[in-house]
Amino acid sequence: MYLAHDIKTAVSEVRPWISCKITVAKFTLKKEISVVNFSNKVFVNAPKDEQYEVMENIWRELITRLFSMPFDPRDDIAYIPTQYISERFKKEGFDGIIYDSAVNAAGYNLCLFDVGIAKANKGHKVTVNSMDIKMNVEDIE
Image (cartoon, rainbow, N blue to C red; front, side, top):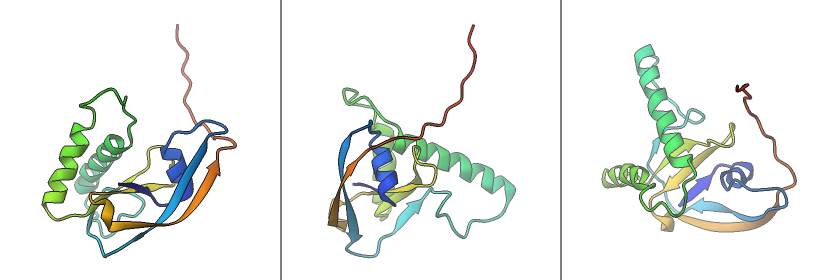
């Protein structure tokens, strides 16, 4: 189960279009959970060693890209890397993974391995009115 820390991140993760209608809900965790944290936004108690920081950032970026990347639904093997990573952490007793959103710079997501851990509470209907696109443009010849 993929959850986001706020409505804007949840809507952004769907990669909507203008006038798109989306239903989102707030969820409550049914128990204390143990997660692997790959987020730069909620990461705490990290060692301050420069070599450690470089390696940690590489892993965080890789996990964020893997879990946030859109895949062609006809590609039946695209999710194998994230499924493998998730199964390894699940086997070690973790309930999920926290990682930064690739589409909302201020957001982060929580992937829960067991959908029964969270309960949907209040739902919301969202209509996308506009989007903010940030981009790099390069000349080509």
